[in-house]
Image (tube, rainbow, N blue to C red; front, top):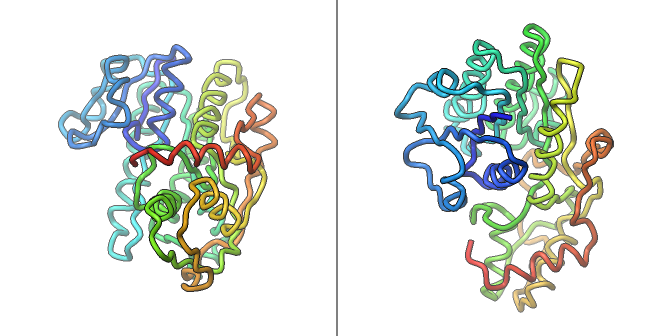
Length: 305
């Protein structure tokens, strides 16, 4: 298929790009002129890129018969002052991508969602404090738009709800890469919360394979409308357990100071993917057991993020 991919220069998107190219799809990448392309530099020759801050987004649709949109672009605005940027990046931009797709007859839209959005189960939840509220609210509002537009225009809107993704090439300011750097550098003490938060940690290459399975299933899909898949192993680890795996894999001498800091306000206490529907499509996570996870991190000892 001819696929328009957003967010290809990012962590998850770079693996999705590699996987979809390997499956023989034709890829068109929407990026910004100043985006760092180090993650995908070796693949640029195999796809066509458009700098959407320099050329109209509509041009991609005019010049190519796009069959599928895969949206991986995101912005993790954490500050209370970043609500506008969160809305622009996580709501208005994908809505624009989707509206042009509808105008030009694209029937398939694959969206990247987050387990953070599980915090919003009803209108009542909007009156409570929840984690990364600007990011989470914008992602949830776009998912709702996807539901409405898929019904109205008879398109496939596939929502992939990602659990806590980890893996090579992630941003150093995220939690897992930060822990790895501290442990690898053998800092004396690493202050952490009590570590009782439960997460479904899923390896990034397994996540990319989920996109591949979903995209490759679209040609056989006869029904139209909204469908959602949970992308995670289906197993949960306490944060403390997972960090201990990293610590052991790296042979670190860093003292893990559990309980030294408080859990962030509104932080999600527990999350686990419902991946039954995704498995029915033929997807299976490859990295699940403790020994497999430990080997992944052991391979990072010499890696620079």
